[in-house]
Image 1: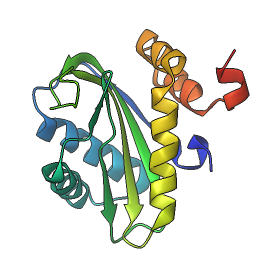
Image 2: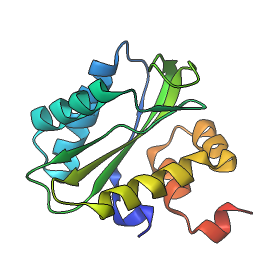
Image 3: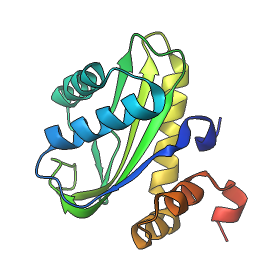
Length: 154
């Protein structure tokens, strides 16, 4: 599994400023609806329900919101770069500017965890995050996220 198998080029977006997690989740829900055909309301509800269990802000300006959705038949991802970092109740109390959201089928089981681990490993790479923060073009952001790992280390 690699990021290009779960992230479509159209599922990458740059957003100027948001004032709340709820608004961010609505943007992600709308993106999931337009790119993957997911019901936006169900997507937003799933993200909010998961977030109520504990914040998905993992630190260093990164959040990994995720949810399981009944109607999906594969794992899908969305990436949002925020031009203005926002509070996310992250573990390190730092505002978030890089958000990689995942939606998985209800019965995805271990594949959901593998996808989450892949995204987490990718987003922990400081060089990748530096490139993501240095670009505002969604096509370039997609390229940074999906380029083969051997090239990312260089």
